[in-house]
Image 1 (cartoon, rainbow, N blue to C red):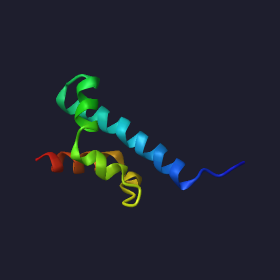
Image 2 (cartoon, rainbow, N blue to C red):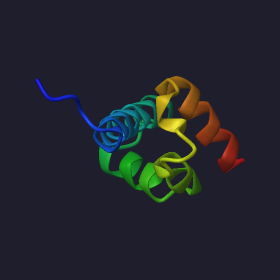
Image 3 (cartoon, helix red, strand yellow):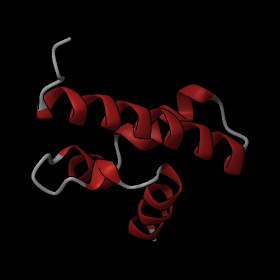
Length: 73
């Protein structure tokens, strides 16, 4: 069985984190999924999360959500 590449792992973990961030926004704000996606994907945090060199994607989604909220303040 072939091992996944670093890029594949980073992509998977980033996508997972993004889906969880959207869930957290929906739960916290009672907005629609579409509104939550817009908030997450248009946030300044998005660029930081997608930076593979920073490897922020390895953190828990709950921790990432707290970071995102702090950046929005």
